[in-house]
Structures are given as structure tokens and as C-alpha cells.
Length: 41
Image (tube, rainbow, N blue to C red; front, side, top):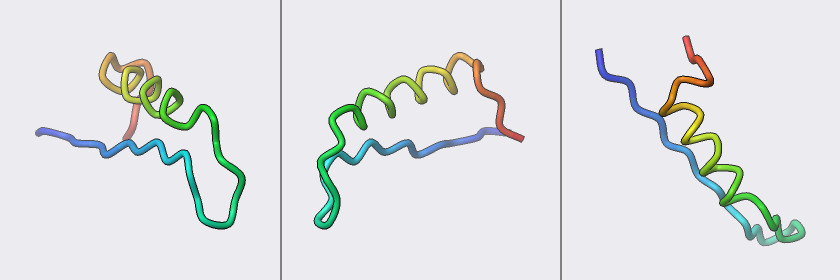
């Protein structure tokens, strides 16, 4: 069974300060999921 994940790193919100590392954090999570370092049920 194939599983898919959509991981988004949003850096700018209209009513919050800019997040400087959101894209890098999303990329790190994507790699961890891809290499099964994080397990989802």
C-alpha cells in the first residue's frame, strides 16, 4: 500500500512574525519520513 505525505514549510503569515527556518524544517522532516527515521501509523 502506497502512502503519501504533503509537508509544507510556510515562512510568511499575514498576522505572525516571519519564520526563518520553516522551509529547512520541512525539508528535514521530509527526509526523515523518506528514510523512515519517523514512523507514521
